[in-house]
Length: 250
Picture 1 (cartoon, rainbow, N blue to C red):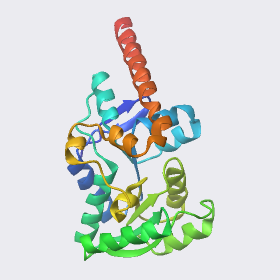
Picture 2: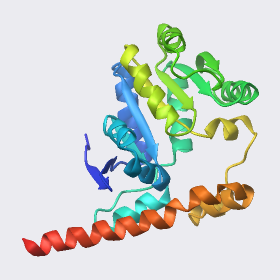
Picture 3: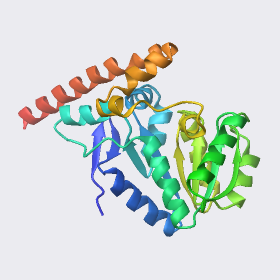
Picture 4: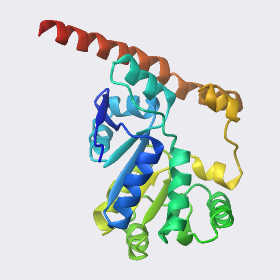
């Protein structure tokens, strides 16, 4: 089993392809192992750099997937290449397909009521054999232990959490302390896409790795979040210079 990790500003990314991720994650579900899965992009890495609590939380994850071409490029810049970008949305779809095929129990939580309900409806159409044991919108007190206890009693094998970072990772950490099984993944705005409320970037845009530009044009209000990207690359160049200096000292 490949357990290689690539450090990007202190965040350890698993160096796996999408297929390798899904293979290992299925094995853990089959063995009923509790699993904390994070999909991280440059914005998340930069947030963790500024928030020690969130940084420490990410280090507790069982897997961190490189969701964002910026992560892949950063790894290449640092001379520690990552095999491929693994988008969180595609991981979610893969996990749902495997859950249908291997009779796994799934719970959806997050987004608006009508969005998560439609996402569940569409998931059932795409995978008729999928056992969805429940769903709930994301507008509740995330520190309420009753919600965690209620979901844990359903014993889902896969829990999709769409609160957006850092809230989804904080909630997953709390949940896995109570649950005795389950793979939990923060999926951000993926329910919006699965429900049909939003659309993914066209294939050509995905292939050119400019989905960030597509999202910015669709949602100009995102520009403040995009400011993390140039800062991220500046930090990567600093890390590269530090590595070179350390190597030269040896």
